[in-house]
Image (cartoon, rainbow, N blue to C red; front, side, top):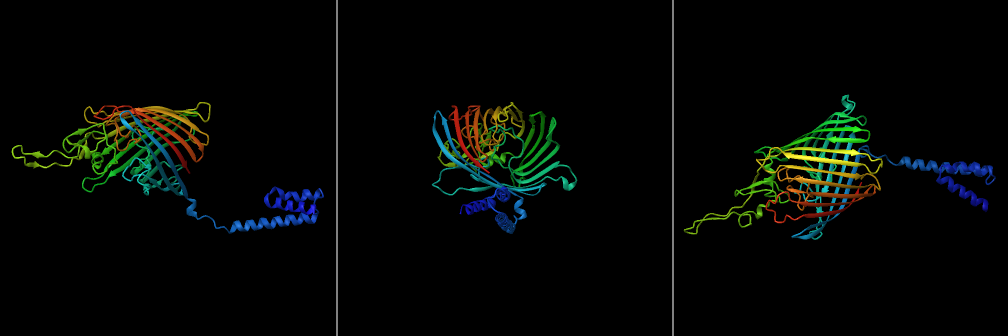
Length: 465
């Protein structure tokens, strides 16, 4: 009986591990089992392995198209608080959902799409506030693009030129700061983008020399033509050992930018803090514009013109609308960053800076902005941690307020200055914690009702794949 138990134990080992196949000979040599039993054990194991191989072979292979697909996405849960003397404290909870796929038929071709939560009329936020009596929330098309990077198929050693068209993530280089000056991180422009890489190498001191070009269409009109942004950016990367430096001067020229301001008349989600002209002749600068509350009676209407003698209304009250930006926009942007190893692999230091100026701003209107700061640490692998600090000053007409970072200050937009502090920790490859605080004030009074220091604090849990 004891011998049978040993034999069955050997069979179990043989069925579960490859190393156990040699045990029959060992046990036979030690006299635990005889030659017949050893041969039977080997034969049984071979039959089971053959059955397993046959079962695996019967599983149909993945379709070829599925091998081309890479899925990605993330879910973010946020608690956000606002504090400012003279204004009631506010606490809100929000979520963000993003899901997409990249399809690569070859290494020279990519198709992609991304779906995202949020208000479809807000171009710079995928956030959805917990509100509206548990109603279902929107899912919008955030990306839909085709990207081509021809190389070997046309006899090149690498992709020298990349072209992309559709709706895509903002593709121009920006410094890795927690607060962007020109573009909000959630902005997904529509149009075309091209990159020409003259130098592209992983070793040596001269790593990258490239020209980025974008043609982004933000309004199409059959009568007046397309309102668009034409962007040009040179990108250079230098390296000395593991220390790297990126410099990427850019110019963003806006064709018919006033169509953005006019769109605010029907889209209240656009944040307009640039200088604008209203239909009643008033000019508003540096504060959020709401035509529905403009006018002498703050009701969005002009005062009626009345005959003083008869009391008869000569001209009835008219709705007040935004008619134009006061300034055209040609934004020159000079972003940069410097990565410095510290000898501790998980604690490098990255310094960054950015300077912007609207060279087409009218007369003496405030038209400049800058920021600078640093990050200590990494946010790549499990147990990574980091801390960032930045200071930013963004004058009223430095950039187009509808596209700049929506989190800077109580309402986003321009005419704001202050500090940004951020700390994060990577719990696992797929789960991170993040805390970001903004401490801001207006650059100019500009008739803002409350100019006290504003505090905005976000705490995020982010799961991604």
